[in-house]
Image 1 (cartoon, rainbow, N blue to C red):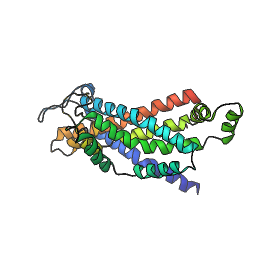
Image 2 (image 1 turned 135 degrees about the vertical axis):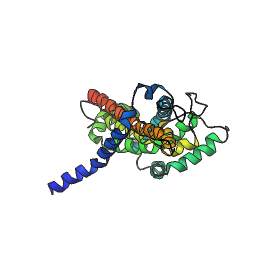
Image 3 (image 1 turned 45 degrees about the vertical axis):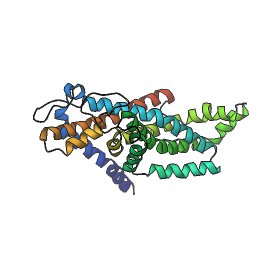
Length: 269
């Protein structure tokens, strides 16, 4: 039985190992300083990079996090504290439905209500669409993490004279914070690679642009466009872009785990 569990554990990480190995083999040779600081070269010219796409991706993640994290954590805290209320049951059900919504559907809705009324694509529309995708995942993760907090801890705080809201914010939320941070990172990692919503909102930009009201380039969009192109040089850049995208997610995860360990003594494991 133990051998079967070992095999299952290895099988669980094999896809990731294979993806990392293949990305490193195909894309590592195109990684250089120019890749992070320069824009793509025109067709037929070697070199260049995806500096504008990397900056655009970070901008979109920042907008999505500013929107999605506060709403998701607040909603998760409410669901955990008022778990039996009718509103909580409704919000929980709708969060589960929204969590399973195909990303292209979210992109179409964002285009209909954010892009079409304004008349042009924009980074703000892309960030809002990604932020909306983060909310249900952060909400359900926050609720589950808060539910794991021992009831005795909550009762002890109330016995000491803490009000209910102060207990929730200062004791319960603080205790569950490592798990909530992990859930937030999973949400960020998920939206970092989303392409469909950005096709309908941010659209892409071949130039440097960090203006919120203008189209912006992003790594998933650049990888998609280059991967389906007929040019070998663009194919190499697409592999390198995919490798950088995985690297961004990995760096965010490592920083978070380091902060969590420093703050809570390894409680985030």
